[in-house]
Length: 296
Image (cartoon, rainbow, N blue to C red; front, side, top):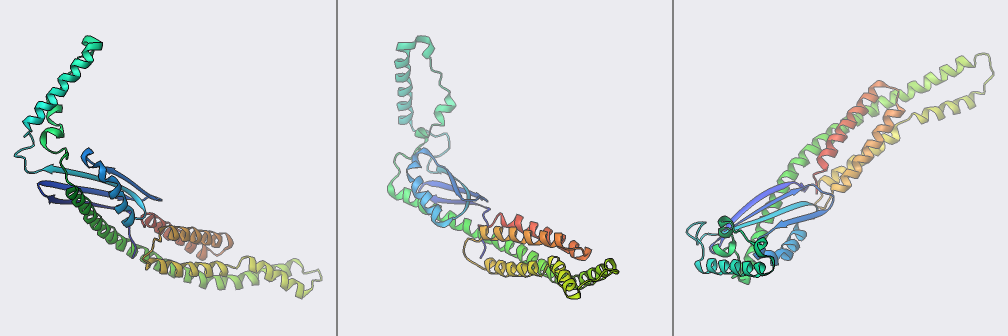
């Protein structure tokens, strides 16, 4: 089943007294690239989070943010008096140290809002987080990843349907090109023979040699090989669309091959019916290629 590289999930839960919110966004990318925004008190689990993500997400750019709040506090402005006194003491001590060497230049201005927003005052700094709590945070991240995988799989189903529709139309166009190519080959052969006979009307020409040369010219305009390769690529694409492996890069490569074959058909053909259909084919190839950029 195809999986899209684009997805978003917001996973919220309570762990003890803490409201925990994970926000994960993924976008298409050639490789796996992950950025994490964590509170400083939980930086110690970043490696664990990266390990979990790499095991589950194989490709794409991944942005992860963690927000948490201590719900045991009566309000967001409730502070710990002991920690407030401790912090004020730090400011006084720092002011005294810098003033000794720099005088008035070392005057420190403290904004009340900055002081009150310090997590050390509100009990959100995590200095007392237990190993069990940290393990629960990692487990909640795994739950968020599971929801993200579901979202990416759902988007992958939508992409699968779009690609199947495009592929079906391309097969029909190729079948029509094949029909016109047979008639074009016979017409080209007849025109060449008639033209050569006209030019060599008063010249003795070996009929066997003439037929060989005409066949050689006609073969250069033959597009059956390109049609066969197109159909072969269609079979491979059908297999990949049903695969559980990473198929994004393989599909992108096949789109390049399809585009090459359609260009060759356009350059070889003189029949406007074939040329128009080859152009339509290129349009569907481009539509598929745009969608494939989002496939893992």
